[in-house]
Amino acid sequence: MAYEFEFLTVETSGRVATVTIDNPPANVITMELLGELNALSSQLKADTGLTVVIIRSADPEFFLAHFDVAAILDRPIGFEPQRDAQLKPFHVLCERFRTMNKIIIARIEGRVGGGGSELSASFDMRFGVRGKTKVNQMEVPLGIIPGGTGTQRMPRLLGRGRALELILSGDDLDAETAERWGYLNRIFEPDEIGPFVDKLAQRIASFSPQAVRQAKLAVNQAERPWTEGLIEEAYLFEQLLRTDEARRNMQRFLDIGGQTREGELRMDELCAQLGDPN
Image 1 (cartoon, rainbow, N blue to C red):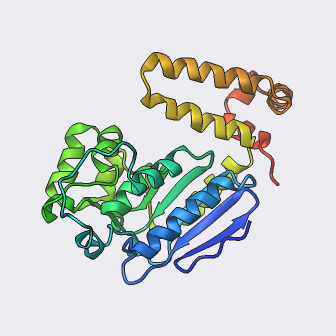
Image 2 (image 1 turned 90 degrees about the horizontal axis):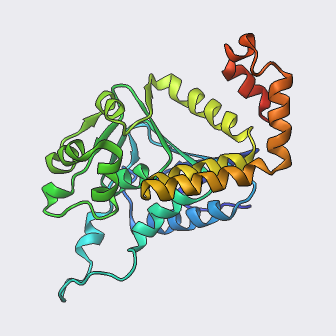
């Protein structure tokens, strides 16, 4: 699939795509960039050849900033607000990334804030840089609230109290705290994050695409009521159990030392051997 954008560059290697955001001076989500992110999400969702997507920035100081405040000020307000019968477009964008059958990994080397933070929180994993990555929700100081999933996503990600601290303070959340609170999976030195994320993406992409996709689908059920999530998990498990690939991999696991004492002590190596290097 050909990906052609002005503010986004997409490079593919096997089942992994790397998206680089470049909208100077600070990767603010302008209407033009928003349009490209929408188009990108739809194209990624439709690309059956991909399993993993890495999203990074061309600017090491800014990953993805807030929504264009000038564009917000231009929104019409000459009527009483009503509760919508359907999701707002930005909500739909976040949900498309959260639910698509690709693993979305954010490589956040610099600042992320506002709508950029809300979108990032909808990705599957987020990695940062020690002393450089900063998270900021700046809406309340502006007199508004996070309106792009933040008030709903952040409590699920951080817990209620920490979400309120981030949202109400307008203060930067440093990389170390963001990792401890669960916003970031891990943090690295500047020269370590790229190799780690690339290796992780390639490792995930080496495994059965169907198993990876069903695993994400099953994990997403955790936000449903407990019993419903368990029922869906069991159904997805039974689906995969019937695939030729799963049965081959389970037999290979036993053949290469699985369920032996020596093999079980090096489980990460066994898992790597089960992946497809191509």
